[in-house]
Structures are given as structure tokens and as C-alpha cells.
Image (cartoon, rainbow, N blue to C red; front, side):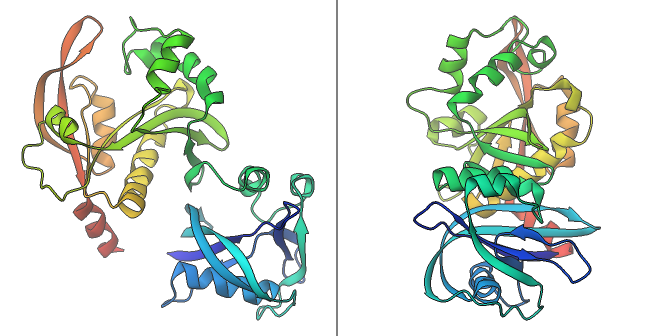
Length: 325
């Protein structure tokens, strides 16, 4: 796997530190300072080194923002984005690869027009310049998982009134008013992590997860749980039927499981799909979930109590998969 780090730095004018780069025979494009990590190098150390090599600035590496992963030219890659502060140095072109042509601070207006090395980064860069933060949890191209915001209520209203969606999530007798959307997805006291799933920038679904408390453990019947285990519950749906049966659900599951393991130290993740929903169960099994036990009459759906399968994924499964790579 190719792994690397990228640096996000904003000055007092809300301009982003960027570099213009490209080989002599290539069209030059802009990006934030970034590059490949050495074999024995942490992501943070890689970030600081790349900033110095590509800009001449000394960087203090701060908060982790999010991870971008995917496949490029047949190679699996992972890039971690960090906030940085400039703590020394001066702008200097001393890239050992001699690919850097310019160093500049770019405004949001500039970023909207620049030819970017990674065009998929543009929405993230613009959001970061505008707000100084980002709602993105992670990117696993072409998927982006970001935090739910108030403006997403119209999306949820549309999805929660789509009979094809309600057949599998909530029930076709449970069409939502906007008031109900607010009650269900935007409660005043909320312990859930609620997110929107995007595909190539288009919102297509919803996913939520939470660290189970004692009540949650009882709901899933997890009598065997250790007091020190971090067990998460998860629920999700693809709200755009045109994106069903394309492998997107499995991609979402696999990437979210890795996010929960790496960023939340999840030991286990559990779900309880209804037993009749064979398509969803098959997707979850392909993503690493296993059926644990049948939960009789677990959930009310379209006028009847439905049996559900308790399904779980364990951190050991991810470690075993990584060991094979």
C-alpha cells in the first residue's frame, strides 16, 4: 500500500498554503503540500518533512482531519490530512525531486478556479478555507462520509418518503413529515454519530453509529461483553435506489469498519438486520460481519414484529486481513 500525508495550513487572511508541481513534460497543477511516507516514518513525521521539502517552512503538526483512501493506477493508497502551524523557515524551493515550481497562499476564490492535482479535493479545500474545519469523517474514493448538517433535512425527507427505501428502512407505512425528520435525525440530546454518504460528491445515503452503553448492550443481548470492550452499534441505508446493487453498500461497510477500528478503537461492531432482508445480510457478510444469533420479534416493521439477526464484526478480523497483505 502507498501511504502518505498532506498538510493544511491557513494564514491570517484565510488563505491556504499550496504548491504548484509537475514533471517537466506535464501540465503543472496545484495541491497542498503532501507526499509518500518512508517505510519507518509516521504519518505525522511524513507531513512535517513534506512541508519542509516542498515549501521550506518548518511545520508543527496538529489535529488529524481525515483520511482519504482508494485505488489509483491499480495501487491501493491511504493519505492522512493534518492541520499544521508554521513554526519556522522561509519559502524555499528545495524539493529533492525537483517537481515544485511555485509556493503560494491561495484564497477560496483562487481555489475555485485552480487546476488541481486532485480535483476531488476541491470541496474539502473550500470548506476548510471557509470554516477552518471540515465535516468529513473519511474519504474512500469515490465515497465520502461526512457529518450530518441541518441542510441535509430535505434530503432525509425525500428518502424517508420513498417507498422503495421505506420497504427496507422504517416501513412503507412510516412516511415522514419534516417535523418527524427533525425528531428522528436531529434530537436535542444525541449520542449518535450521524453522517451522510456521498458518491462522487452526490449525497446518496445515511449512516449512524454509537458506542453502546448498558441499555444498548441489553437491546442486542450482548451478555458476553467484557467491561473494557468498545462495542459500537451501526445502522444505515442507501436512499437513492439507482445506487443499489453496485457494490456501494459493501464498500461503505468495509470503509466504515476500518474508520471505527482506527479512529474509535472499536473492538466489535454490531447490527440487527431483519431476517427476511437477505440482500442486506449478504452485503454485511461480504464486509466481514457474521451471524451470531436470531433475535425473535426484535423490530416492528409494517404492522408486525420481525425477527432480526444479530450480526457482528470483530477487530480481530481486520487485524487478520491486514496480516495477509
